[in-house]
Image 1 (spheres, rainbow, N blue to C red):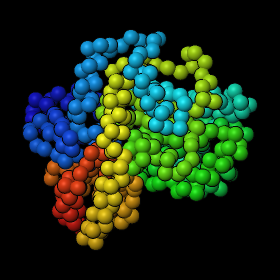
Image 2 (spheres, rainbow, N blue to C red):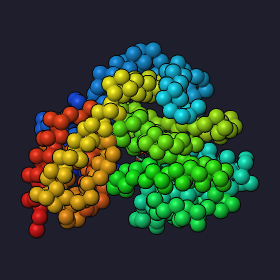
Image 3 (tube, rainbow, N blue to C red):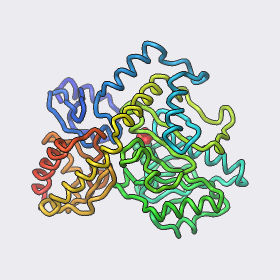
Image 4 (tube, rainbow, N blue to C red):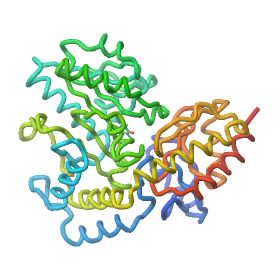
Length: 394
Ligand SMILES: *Cc1c(COP(=O)(O)O)cnc(C)c1O
């Protein structure tokens, strides 16, 4: 980062510790910074750039749509909005779509819809059961839904009405459900929490419990949706259908876009209950439509499954040399634990070597590359890990 850019950075409100580099351009699996240094990207814009950086499908959609219509206001339908909603209902078990711009906003929509359902059909039940170590976003309500220990005392008072249970413990859910409960909301694989999957029996039991009690099952697929886990949506692995699903990250391929999908029986909002200036905005709709069509046409969920297995096998191959533990994940959402709590040091050393990875916890490394990743790039990534990790043993 040169003097000029360092000076400019003083105008940014601090919210994150960022390295002293400025990203300038990207193509496919690679990013380049302002000094021309090249990086292999294994975080994919935070599980977002599913088609890689600057794919033609997105630039074409943006160009065409921006020549046609950028914003007609949320008071009107627009054509890409209708086409995109129909595509999403065609490829999923859902009947209705609400569009927004960020994951947290989609989850706010899901929370409000569950409370509306509780008010209408469950004698005013409003409580939502979520999970310990889960993640649902950074607005006030989604922070309350999130089960991050370190957030418990932040920005008090919290939005009330959330109870947290550990995952894969159905008894804990039974003990928490009461007449105030309107929904259970969770990620099929906890992403920010460090890649922990729900097991199949637990999900089937959750579905049964929700059916028996008449409450809603909400899947936050913001990280797992759109092919990331090897199926278009992670709920398909469990052979159940949630009542509500939220999507973001991959759905826009890097463009700010999110969606909440639900069944016909939950088409219960009254006019004005939910919305936003950019909900269903034509540019975002055209991009989302192009991205999801590309994911389908290029069979990227299948590629995620194949390459994900290759990453797991490759990590197992360097497991001894690098003292890796608990190699886990599904498709291209993968994590492993380190022998020491030095994840951020490993991330910064890899960055020097031209590899971008993520450490969601001090002893954990997470990989979430674009869905277009190939074996060649995986081999390069593994070589860099092999070079960096053993050097940090002490
Ligand atoms: C990233 C994420 C969110 C929040 O999405 P934003 O777009 O950052 O608001 C919510 N839930 C899950 C599972 C996520 O991974």
